[in-house]
Length: 308
Image (cartoon, rainbow, N blue to C red):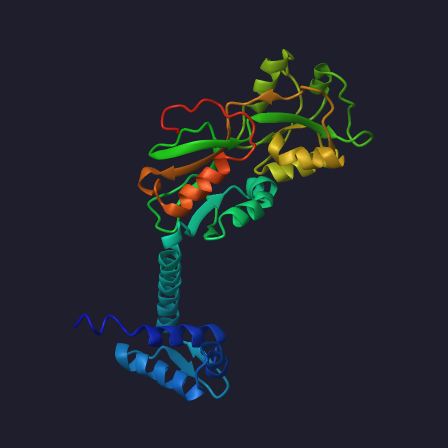
């Protein structure tokens, strides 16, 4: 089989994917700015090229065959990657381009996204593409350039820069909502202690910082996101420990209370920008990193091994 047959022309693949997406020739022709006849001929030419029927034809609609469905999924993904690579190439000459990153959802919504208009104003040539966040990271994936992760700054094979999150606030329901009024650290053991699944030692650290034993204290529900933890506090389910950068808006608005001055603690964990050494000089990443590190963030802890 010749290599030429394995590489159908791009315009035929584009016509095929567009017809598949719209389920018919008419709307696909409008999207491609071609005549219906031209689109129909391109689809038929692709079918002759591969020697397989890609569509089942009825009077009103085209539907993909099982083979066509598999082929469309693969081809549409390749076309999307080609477009992204071309956009990055076109815009990279001015230090910009596309940056693919993953960010924890609560941190993205509460801290990063409100700051992005500033990034766009300073570096309009940098385009951010948020990819689905998964616990951990896989920088071997060509669709991921960097991540903002929660931890102590140590991830094998990655550079890491502290951003925020080591200032942890003790939050409680507003007055009249909670089960116990917290007027001193010694009131905390009488409350239901809400927990975050990824920070199992938070209450132990708080106990050590304030010299208040928590043995025998009622352990409350466990949550997997700080946003849901904050919401649980706001409706009176208990008290919680949350990075201040994620809850300051609710404290200011009075949705939750910060009952004690200096009632939190300084954690050895926080949010870090992480990326592999191989991408360290990627132009949009350099601009994004330098902008993040230039923000008025809380005092940064000293980086450990593997951090920068």
